[in-house]
Length: 120
Image (cartoon, rainbow, N blue to C red):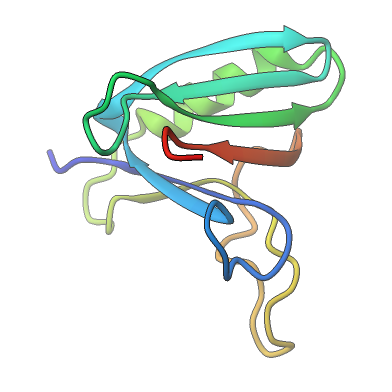
């Protein structure tokens, strides 16, 4: 089976560094709750450096388990006959009027994100 790729996009134009990012599923390391409304997803660094890349998500208060369950379902879903592109969350709301977000799917309990890579 082909690799599943996980896509995250913050709100805005997605025209600058760290506005959007995609990771292969195989690089997922784990998730950590840092407070009642924050959950961080960690991935092996894309450039092979020691520090992990991460996506810090603002979530519905206390919804850590729901978000993790939905993430696991999306990340591990059977992707046969698809392009193996899975939207975890796309918050980009500033696209041209004739286009929408890449996908209306994704984890709805994520309301904001910050993308951090080792070269931040």
